[in-house]
Image (cartoon, rainbow, N blue to C red; front, side):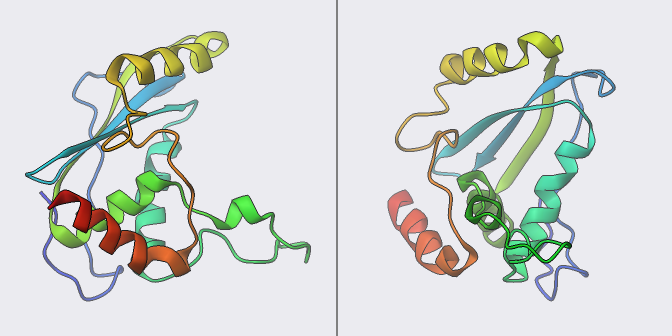
Length: 161
């Protein structure tokens, strides 16, 4: 379960991913994020080549809760960041809202996949679990900017009632 401490992200206990299936994280793998609101269950399937990919979600949730863009508007070399790099994926919105609402989050690797087959297997599992469905699937949803957080959160909460 999530912490109810809401002071600042440095004080917060943001959810942790687990590895109940003992997937080898030194090899490419697929992972599942499941968010249960008590009224609905949101699902997301992703792929990763490194274990660090799993930690990126927690960092993004912390940034969202601090009201920060996904990345700075300018790169280290002074060039502007591409618009897509400033935007969060919809799964990040639901994870941040889950933290605020104290919803149950399960985030775990589900299977190892050969690197050459990673994209195809990801699409296969997305289709099997129907994580692109209009209401509660989180794959293939729109991306969003931090300025849209409040409106999108209210819209999502309204849709659950």
